Amino acid sequence: MTEPMAALLQQQLSKGDPQLAQLAQFLTRREEQLTRELADEEAERALALSREASSLRRLMDEMSARVDTLQHRLDELAGALGACPGCWGTDPDCRYCRGHGRPGQLPPDKVAFDQLVLPAVRTHTVLSRRSHPRQTGSET
Ligand SMILES: [Zn+2]
Image (cartoon, rainbow, N blue to C red; front, side, top):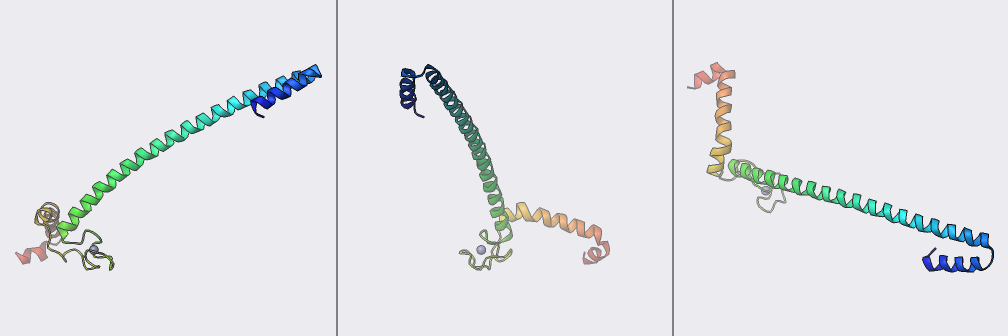
């Protein structure tokens, strides 16, 4: 019940039965109390939702930054391996390579190759010699 309607009802009732007037007063106060409680609860819910939204926004920003970092590394590695940075040769509809950009299909980026691939190849070679000494020993 709206404030003016409650007051009007209270006025009408107070002209007649005093007990009804008292009841109307009680109901009006109770309505006001419940309205305040509801407003407080709504404010608390809005605050909680706002905090949750802020937290999700921060999480999304962190994840976006992480994806950007990983995409940059993936692009570097694709360059080092001479692969299509868009699909690595896996997408026939790729606008860069039409699915022909597997590693080794493009000239590798020398700086990225020396930085990312060469150390791994050297380590792989050393480990292969250790695990297969006779085979690698006959090569040299
Ligand atoms: Zn591609």
